[in-house]
Length: 55
Image 1 (cartoon, rainbow, N blue to C red):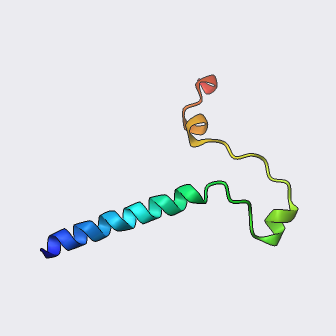
Image 2 (image 1 turned 120 degrees about the vertical axis):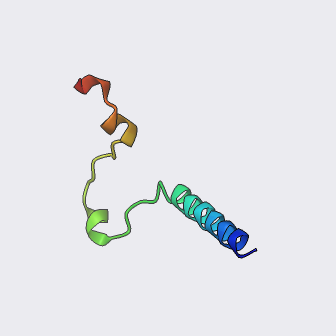
């Protein structure tokens, strides 16, 4: 019973974390210094680690 409780709690925590990360992925910067600067676009991880042009 206790094992199932902790398993459910872990699954619920993982789902809440994934939801929070997914919903805030396009949030603009909130720090004043970052708001004032022009930032380059982010490079997707897929293109950074698996760029076929680098080989």
